[in-house]
Image 1 (cartoon, one colour):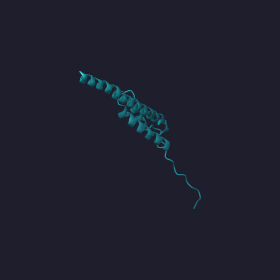
Image 2 (cartoon, one colour):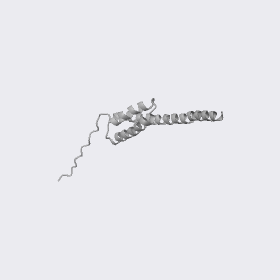
Image 3 (cartoon, helix red, strand yellow):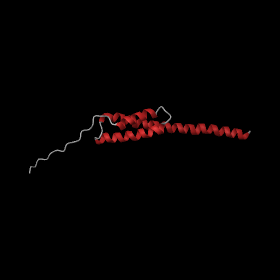
Image 4 (cartoon, one colour):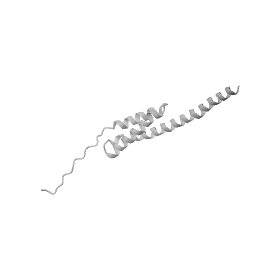
Length: 107
């Protein structure tokens, strides 16, 4: 028997950009200017993290890393802006309605 070890073939990383990175980018671009920050921002964030993890493990092409990172960053921004928007509507819009009710009750 020979003492020579044969190296196991390493599966090649596909050069094709992963679909999760593309989906994260598209959802993040859609989430930021639209009023659906939560509906598109959360999936963009999740898909961006998943694709980034696949790239770090060598299961996906590094060419899609920028898409995953942009998906993560814009997903976070859309969630932050969505929270600000909801807070603005609740406190300022809601306070205006409450004042109208109080004024009508006083008459």
